[in-house]
Amino acid sequence: MNLREEFPFACGIGIGIPEPGTGGKQWIKVLERKCSMVTETGSLKRAVIDQLTPYVPGKSIEEVRRELGLSRIIKLASNENPLGPSPRAVQAMVKELQEVHVYPNGKDRQLREAIADRCGLKPEMVIFSNGEDNILTLITQAFLETGEESVVASITFHAYTTATIIAGGRVCPVPLKDYTHDLEAMLEAINEKTKLVFICNPNNPTGTMVTKGQADWFMERVGDEVLVIFDEAYGEYADRDQYPDAVRYVKEGRNVLVLRTFSKLFGLAGVRVGYALGKPDLIRALAAVREPFAVDRIGQAGALAVLEDEEYIRRSKEVNRDGKEFLYRELDRMGLSYVPTQANFILVDTGKKAELVHEAMQREGVIIRPAHHWGLKTKIRVTIGTREQNQWFISALQKVLARV
Ligand SMILES: Cc1ncc(COP(=O)(O)O)c(C=O)c1O
Figure (cartoon, rainbow, N blue to C red):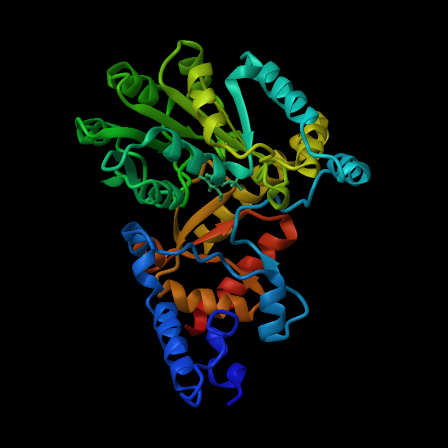
């Protein structure tokens, strides 16, 4: 018998010497036992794992190119900066390649100091990690006891739910009101089991904003037995006059964490740099569960450089503002409704099944995010692109809606 062919899944675990006189049968029994262990590994995993719906990222440009054989493809599905990275960040990252044999430590301090300086905080009130996604995991690991609850909007960024469940917590979803966080209802949802409250501002996938007045109202009423997390991944795009000053709550010593990322406006999604701002004891708790070298050298070098690239930051905001106006105009002309956005994406109601629109758009070379996963059956979320990308999106959408 050829072991590898007969039991390809068992190779390497059941190999042994046949019992003398059994013609190898004994040995096959051992293998069967091992094989059944392999097929029953479900019993080894924690019960909460079955509650998780794995994150399904949108297809990459390479995947779509391979599957559909298209030469021209744009991705407007993950809210990345359509301008590409800052040239200064690229230069700094390339230079840093010479140092990659050394663990990344020193720049973490530089980066924390740079952010602390900009926010008027002390460096010990800042922690960086491998993207904001990872900071969310650190938060639930550091603060959530088994059975404790996270209050989240329904619908919002999926990662709050995933991180809560993995930590053995429970999620308390509070429906949005007019596509925006309903802070009154979220306040009411807090009970003796609540530990975390997540406010995604602007909210993904709706693009709506909790205003300064609403956030202040909420913070005046919420007790310090819960930790309030303001996720400001898209905060730089929001209307500054109305936008809450969540860092002020940190300065006031409240139990608040403010989360930000270099993946969106700062154009560094591929190197995974995110951070949290909070009072020192909260940050120390996050540091206790974080792996030692959570942000690599390349990411740190890129982040430090892009912070200095004021022209890139200005231009990125400008492209987003112009793109938003263009898309609003075109969507109005097409008679499609959308949720006015404070971010770098727009939730558009196509009036057709989102998954069909998504597939047909992909065949036109435009990757967008269908919103049926969030229960929004006819809506899509599209990242605001460059002028050329937005034009392409609109003409593809017109074609697709005429036929699906
Ligand atoms: C609201 C929100 N928070 C956090 C993240 C994750 O950011 P990062 O790329 O830093 O992990 C995203 C990414 O799409 C997001 O939309």
